[in-house]
Image (tube, rainbow, N blue to C red; front, side, top):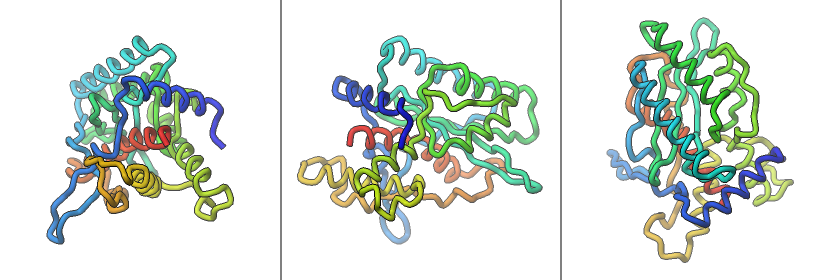
Length: 274
């Protein structure tokens, strides 16, 4: 089952999406890649995420997010729109048997396109001013702002962020776990007794399921935004276990991290509108 407040969020999004809302779609993440073996179809961001590793970068990020959150509150009141949600994810590093945050990434949709930021939580050399600013921004996002926040199986992420900022982050009504929403919808579709739902699905499995569902929905409709075979697209997880302590991160790592946040916004739209 999903928390009671999830139902009101879904209902509000279904209502506003019929007006003038810009709805995130798989199309913006479908960017074919040429390889030595031909064309590979895996989801990717249309533009690289922004790497945040300086006080100036942090100020720009907070200003952008503050603008988006305030605009949402000012114009929509109690209503919600897809483009005003803030998605997050994090990557970790292990050292001496201890696991710590390496990065945290955020994404919003603006004018139909995903914007993503990957924030360095492991500066090398250590920078007290930068780290203090990072903690302040994370406290603002997760404890003080009215942002509608999306995560995926985010309890562990929130525990790690709480440890990083030195303050407990409770699971508030403005938090949505896309994994819970996806598994609830998949169980409804497949039947509650289906063996496939014996455990909660991972992010890649959720993407594959809703990509295929979207393809079936579009079948028979003359749309050039979707492939005939949506199952040929996938979310790559090659960088999941890469070295997140290294600096600089590779372009593939940055793209992977930013996409893991941005894809949550598309998943939310697919789940709600289905």
